[in-house]
Length: 208
Length: 208
DNA sequence: GTCTATAGAGGGATAGAC
DNA sequence: GTCTATCCCTCTATAGAC
Image (cartoon, rainbow over all chains, first blue to last red; front, side, top):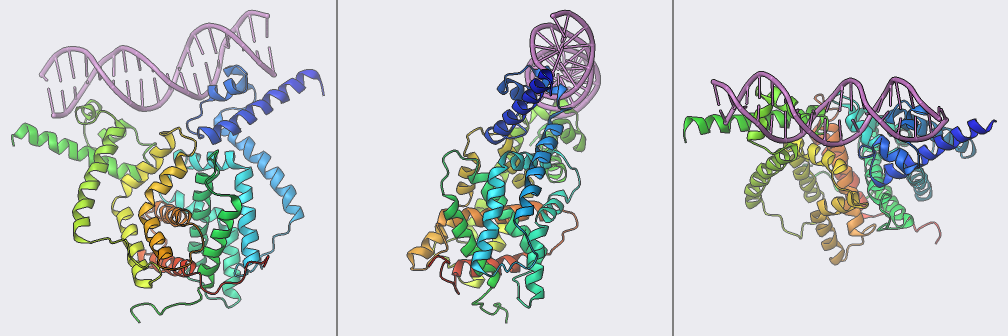
């Protein structure tokens, strides 16, 4: 690889790193192209030698993420028949989700904000929430098929749990001085959702 | 009231109603001043005879909301000692929250989006999430003081429940063809959270 | 590839006639 | 108060020298 090409790769990396940092600090929508180039110590015009625009940059970050994710997927299997009513398994599941969001926070933030400005479909928010939680839904459906009685429809439950997780992550992980440790958050959510899903000591509905 | 003033009030109302509709359909950030005036059948310039800008319009909508809310508050008391581990009381509580979000969806959507562009504080998202759920936190602290063992810190739990609710509401209520009825959503969430908060049939933590 | 300089689009906000 | 017309600013994106 020649020197020129190496410098170019260096610049592209600097732009990506600057973007990742700024997306967390200021948010995706609030970050201008010129903010990114300035933070990377480059001229504004140089940005367009590497990306067609802010959306393309985000796509590149997302591609990087997928590469890393699929590499990791090969190590830790993720079979459908997890039992989310087992405390350890639920805890592990939540821990993985939390860690993924923490480690890819810039992209999580950016995608979240971009979804607002982006699509114009009226039920877009619901559709993407359902799509993003389809793995969770799969586990819940497995539980139901195993004879476990869930508190409601698996799609709805998965969306609820996913919404809870992403809201908390976006709020807590962006703070430089976190109000709670990861362990505390995970323990709390594990207990809350474990009992919620088990649906154990149920009163009859009041109209019974 | 003279005719001129009546026409003015009419215009202001038309602008507000157009804004409410568009905020739900296209979102707050995606709605331009000229979109609002066009939808209201007015000229762009007229907007500024009533509001200093989009933010002032939102503030006006919020003020209208507060007026209506405080009127309703006087009817239905909201004492601190609700027992959220009672199914009916939890259900009622969730139903009220859900109905408020449904009826004020334009403002909920707008405030949610405005919070992204607006503040620059690093832990802003967490702070506002905590603030918005302080009433819930209050109920949870009451439970704890009553000797009930919660699955975690009341502030964190309140934030989690609030995040769950608002995410679901923003996703489901904006869709013109809702995937679930209000009753179904409320039943599911009531069961999930009821058992979650009761924390009943607990395994010992795995490291015990 | 990177820079400086600038063109161009989009939209917020104002001027002034009616 | 409402309109039409237009200004002006911000930010994206390109041009062209190095």
